[in-house]
Picture 1 (cartoon, protein in one colour):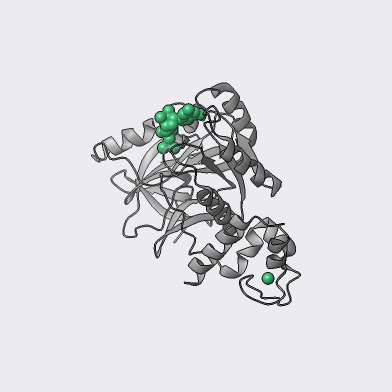
Picture 2 (cartoon, helix red, strand yellow):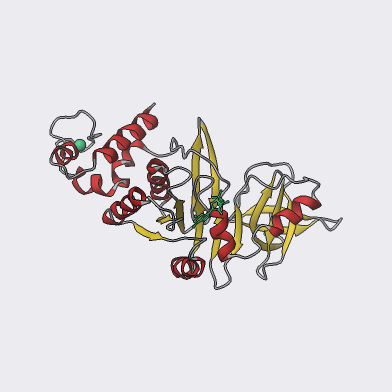
Length: 295
Ligand code: GDP
Ligand code: ZN
């Protein structure tokens, strides 16, 4: 097929209909005929007009990155062309270290950077969450503590600093304050999707896809739909230790080059664990994900 039409960015999906934005940021609906599910938010696509004036997605340009998660045995794409992932967590409603660690592994698997954001810094009793954040920083991850509600201006400034000119996917379990943070950075963020889902007669139901928002100062923020578990079945078990900095640091000294750091003799990872240099909770997490990937 010839390279027809104009290039646009996919900013939301509603089944076979998509919201796309041209280079001026003007949104419009475009359909994908015949195929389903091959276009995802973040894709750059070629759009043309059919004889009735309907915008049609002809093809997608090659992707620089694809972020995925697994749900049971199904793989789900979160977004394309993302440069970094920002993981939002908070002490309440529930503080779940595994969700954050899993998202960090997913970012590594997609070959992109990550940033852990502790929100609701204003809550009392957040010491466990704070020390969790400090441990991530000690492992070399970029971290940030904010309060979207009690310190909105400071939060906006600190976030703009790390988000400016980059394309960032926001992930987090529901209730962590992801929408509050998004609205702080992109006022009125929910409006376009609501308007178009209304036009498509989808009623109150909006979209279960991610949504792409240009940031006022440059760059983009992509909101992912809330989900509770971050399945990683799509990752390669052999790459897992390399994705955990404290394991990667010593893994090269194991007796076997293909050591899985489980029960093999002369394993430098388990030796470091025995010396107290690796957090037992992180090693237990490693074994759990390993079992998942091999299962
Ligand atoms: P989402 O499900 O992650 O999008 O979370 P929301 O943005 O809807 O926020 C969930 C709840 O947490 C709401 O009641 C917010 O008002 C509240 N919340 C968000 N940010 C903060 C914060 O920094 N501090 C406190 N105390 N509450 C917050
Ligand atoms: Zn080993």
